[in-house]
Length: 410
Image 1 (tube, rainbow, N blue to C red):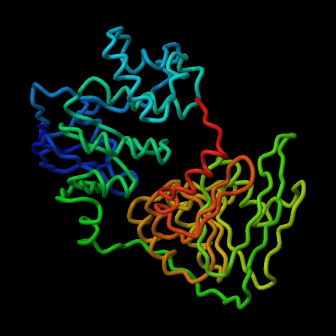
Image 2: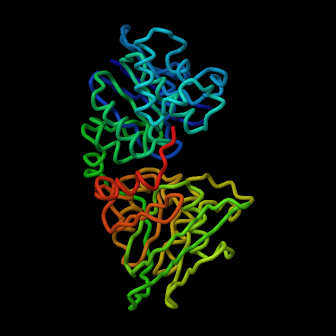
């Protein structure tokens, strides 16, 4: 058990926590949520002893074995992935367990004996998560653990956490994870922490959402087709990034683009929004009455010289985009840099929007609740289905197409 007794924390003139009393008990999973800068990560650092409280004390049962997700993977650059996870253990049982965890998190066998410096940053972070899960800890402290997981590895991680018998304290913006795994929600705001029993939806049911993203009423389109994309091809430095992509969008469809490499979706959105006007071949044809509002991936240049925090910039850009009386929204990762309350408010606004939405998002709940059509972008062509995201992922025909169109990478 971990207990906060009258914890106060002052950093300079700023009060982070004021007289907080809290218990984290074994067998529970605590989802840590709250506004940006409210103290979520600081809460974990207090437990780890990296930050000392100004007043009060934190009592941790002496038999607890604490493990955390360490983001400093650079310290392990010259170690193999297996050695990083096992901390150098050569015990066959340890090695086998480490392999199982790595594979579950989407790191294939062929990578296990490579040095950390030789694999991608995503693989490095997944390896550090595997390190945190390894060794039968009784307390897990994890800061945004699903951020770099794909669907399959996220499912594996969720199942791991559902079977975990100890205490889990997890900072997360992943509402799907918070709903499926968490038994309690800790709402961290400047100065206080409120503990709620239940998952994210239980917490939200008792809340009044303050954030708001109102969508200006769009002009309706009467035609059967708002967008035609036919055999679109685009290369960068001689390498194909978009190949043989064709689809037709009807007015009112809400289409989530998934799969492939992130740059492919970004480039497609830039072409559709008219930001990228040069492509190798193909047709991109909008209905003459289409009114497009585009939220790009990178809008930093619009705030040059501004001291606004990333979350404030994100909210400002969304408000601008949503107020343009557009009947088509093209949104690249619209939940990036938002807090949970803002994500929830945006989610509801887009559900109620009666225009067309083309978007991508790493937030599974966001995609599931908004999209009525899914388009996957493999190396060539598309995998296109009118369905929810969960139905898309579970459909046997889609699974077969995905296996054929994506070559398995070790």
